[in-house]
Structures are given as C-alpha cells and as structure tokens.
Length: 251
Image (tube, rainbow, N blue to C red):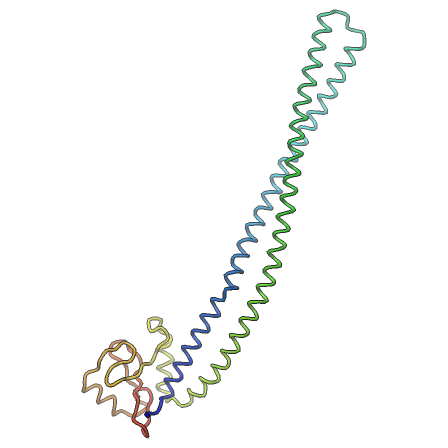
C-alpha cells in the first residue's frame, strides 16, 4: 500500500481543528447569553419606564390631594357659615346650601380620582418589584450559563490542544516550501480551509479537474519538495508515490 503523505494528515487535523473552532464559536450557551442580555436590556428599560410613570402618577396624586384638601376647607367654611346663624334670608341660605353641596360633590370627585391614582401607584410598585425579581433571575441565569459555557469551552480547548500536538508532529515531516504554501492557501476563504488535494491518477481530488497527461507526468517525476498546484482551484497537489518512494507537496 502506498505511504500516506504527512500533508494529508496535517490537513485532516487542521480541518478537524476548524470544525472544533466552529463548534466552540456556536456553543448553544452563547446564544443563550445573547438572549439573556437582550432580556436584561428589556427589563431595565421597562423598569425605567415604570419609575417614570410612577413619578408622573405621584405628582398627579399630590395634585388631587391638594384639591381635596382645598375643597374640604372651603366646604367646612361654607358649612360653618351656613350653621352660624348669621345668614337669615331664605334665598341666601338655599344658595349657601347649594354651594356646600356642589363643593362636597367636587371634593368627592377629586377623592375618587385620588383613589384611582393611589391604586395606579400600587400597581406600578408591584410591577417594579416583579421587574426586579425577573432581572435578578436573569443575572442568576447568566452566571449559570457562563459557567456552563466555560466548561464546554474547556473541553473543546483540551481537544484542540491534543490536535495541535498531533498536527505539529506531522508538520515536521512536510518540506518547508510545501508547508509555507499550504499555510498561505489555508488563509484563502474560497478554499474553505482545504489548501491541499491528492492527485489521483491525474485528477485533482478537490475540484476533480483532470490535468493534461504531459503536466501530470511532469509533476509525477518532480522531487518531493517541488510545489505543484491544481490549475483550476490552485490547491497544492499531493502525489501518492508507490510504496518505497516518498511523497509530499507535488507530491
């Protein structure tokens, strides 16, 4: 069986590393944290709006209270006058009684409005308390999720460390000229991390383009450290030599 070029192993390990990095970046805990962050912002905005509304209702309640107090004082003064005996004329007494009645009615209306604002204050206070409880739960969930994320990252980082060690050993067996070009092509986004491809009977193992016979024969007879590229996808071509030979890069 022909020997397996080291660059094949290097690329296999690099691709495995790429997959791990994607998995690390897309850990579900990250999405959970993003959702919790958005929820925290929503709750904080809601709390600020609640406090603003309460301040407005507070001012309204004080206004109603002042109105009620003023009308109560006025009604009391009218009643004192009504029952003081100083007013004798029937029409004046009737007018005074009507004024007392109207003043007490307005006082009652303002008292009803004041009661509504007090109820609204109670509702807003309860809403603010519930909001802060929910916000506290978000903080707790964030801490729990961050711990879970750190644990998941640590497991992947451990795998990445093992891969790096294995990959480093294989890289030692790849000619430097081939390795430099391979690393350069690995940075090309269009190649998707696959910077090398096996040359399978004159065909690029990545894009499946078939090399002209003359070009294939030339590459096949080159030294192991001589670079060869696929004319279509530009990847480094890895030639598999017969058992007992060597291979790499144009290999």
